[in-house]
Amino acid sequence: MFPDLTPSLKAVAPDIRGRLLPNVALSDLTWLRAGGPAQLLFTPADEDDLAYFLAHCPQDIPVMVIGVGSNLLVRDGGVPGVVIRLARSFNEIEPLSETRIRAGAAVPDVRLAQAAAAAGIAGLAFYRGIPGTIGGALRMNAGAHGGETKDILAEARAVDRAGTLHVFDNASMGFTYRHCGVPADCIFTQAVFEGRLGDKAEIESSMREVAEYREANQPIKSRTGGSTFKNPPGHSAWKLIDAAGCRGLRIGGVHISEMHCNFLINDGNASADEIERLGETVRERVFAHSGIMLEWEIKRIGIPAGASN
Ligand SMILES: Cc1cc2nc3c(=O)[nH]c(=O)nc-3n(C[C@H](O)[C@H](O)[C@H](O)COP(=O)(O)OP(=O)(O)OC[C@H]3O[C@@H](n4cnc5c(N)ncnc54)[C@H](O)[C@@H]3O)c2cc1C
Image (cartoon, rainbow, N blue to C red; front, side, top):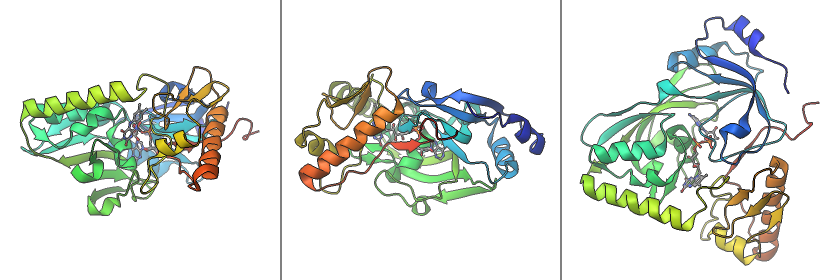
């Protein structure tokens, strides 16, 4: 448990309208279902409230944002400082024209894919298979089935650590494979996407294909963080992992999926330490076998158990 930051933050930012909750278990808010608490979880009421909070929160308090935690491993000691989670008022979708659609950063990717299909906007169907939010998709340049966030993003709004609002066009997002070059302190609040004129029935059919492919090829109902490692240039991470003999490899309550060996599966009660050790073991074995050092795609956040004492 961390000391409660609420009283000191309320003292410096008395007009906060959002919710502040101390010591919230992040295992309940992440797909891997492991790890410690957030020292303070802040759910801003809206974009102005977020900007007000960031402008007033003392600079020595670390601040980070999470989406639905589908790409996160929270370490067992939890996350010191403030974890921000966007909710209701960041959850709106609005078609702007025959090819443009706006979505709040808390909107699930799947819901944006469905709304774009309903509006006859093609090009966003790949979001049907990604279980994160738009905020996470912007930060990770999420992509699948030949599409990537960078292909459809027109502009994104974000608030920085000082509470200043920025608008980034596609070129200034600095997108590369599973990466966005916007400074790490920027919290995305909404984005506008540019698709193509499409046929509703065709878009819906490609979304069904995406969903069926996922069901058949990925352990999507398990406690996982999706692809654990990025594909190194010219290679598939899963093939390297398989060739290094790691399919099914286990440490404590976590194992490498038999179905897709770039996925780690928490059987139920794995600690974050076990999950991270399994990942590091895989990296060592792949390096020994192929000379390639895999890079984590899952973001590891927070501190190990006991590190705050
Ligand atoms: C079963 C499964 C399948 C997956 N398949 C794919 C796939 O095909 N393709 C793919 O790309 N990914 C895939 N993923 C990974 C994951 O869904 C994506 O990376 C997703 O974009 C993460 O979104 P999130 O809301 O869960 O973000 P989180 O996991 O909560 O956070 C991920 C990162 O985004 C940052 N972030 C979150 N919200 C914001 C915001 N508002 N502003 C700024 N930064 C923010 C966080 O700080 C963190 O650095 C899969 C995951 C699972 C569990």
